[in-house]
Length: 280
Ligand SMILES: NC(=O)C1=CN([C@@H]2O[C@H](COP(=O)(O)OP(=O)(O)OC[C@H]3O[C@@H](n4cnc5c(N)ncnc54)[C@H](OP(=O)(O)O)[C@@H]3O)[C@@H](O)[C@H]2O)C=CC1
Ligand SMILES: CC(C)(CO)C(=O)C(=O)O
Image 1 (cartoon, rainbow, N blue to C red):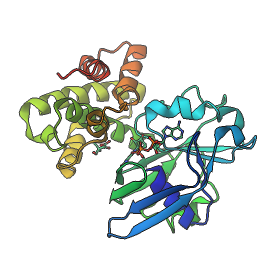
Image 2: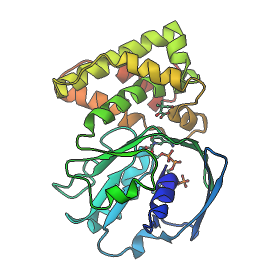
Image 3: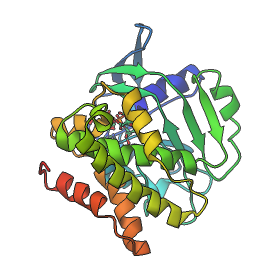
Image 4: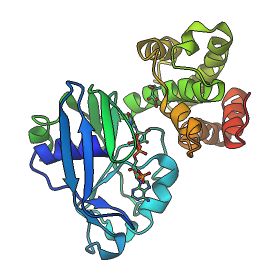
């Protein structure tokens, strides 16, 4: 997803530098676009140790388990003039990693990119919403001319929460049962588990915000059917033995539930199962 964002930003005339340790420079990437075109990208790389003292703009697009490691050398270089854009599923991955009082912009996207470095395939180029607690930055309007279907949200939280619930249901069940997304809707036993996960998520979110509409199951099943043949990102991570984003998705819900004194046994069960590498 970071490579796709880098491509749009480059098209808009922004310079994009990858920050990583021990990487060949530049990073040569191939992006296969949905219309069949191939886009080559050559991205400069900076080792965190050689970064300037101040970072103006930072796009965080590592999978959530790697956020702490990626951010550790950067936090001192952020201040109130910096702008951080979090491009990740789940919630809470940046908690405690930003200077006090600092809030990041958040992104929610329905685009999909697959593949491992250096080849990335854009499976779907759909809508993306950016937002936070401020007005859009000055560069936002010009960026929309180069980033298809890009929108600003003054209050991004409802979109994040809808995405969170879809991920909290579809991702762990498809990973643990090794099935494509559509099975969540088609298989009665999985649908029952989906209903429990979803009701618990709605209960937590309604407690956090009484205006939360709840009744998320219809939306989740619509997403599962719309992506019926797809392998969810958590199933893909699980299949290749990589760390998953369970802690930022169901783990975040469990953490909130604990704080609020709510019972969320179905979510707790999938977190435990994913952490222990068990099949249910
Ligand atoms: N892909 C998609 O379709 C979508 C993804 N998202 C979200 O976007 C986020 C990113 O996902 P995705 O792009 O798929 O993930 P990828 O694993 O494909 O990309 C993450 C990149 O971060 C790099 N990385 C890992 N650790 C570090 C570090 N310490 N310093 C610098 N770079 C590092 C990885 O390097 P390496 O290649 O060496 O592992 C990899 O290139 C996730 O939260 C995901 O849920 C949201 C919607 C759709
Ligand atoms: C919506 C869904 C489940 C689509 O596959 C997704 O976002 C993911 O796989 O992480």
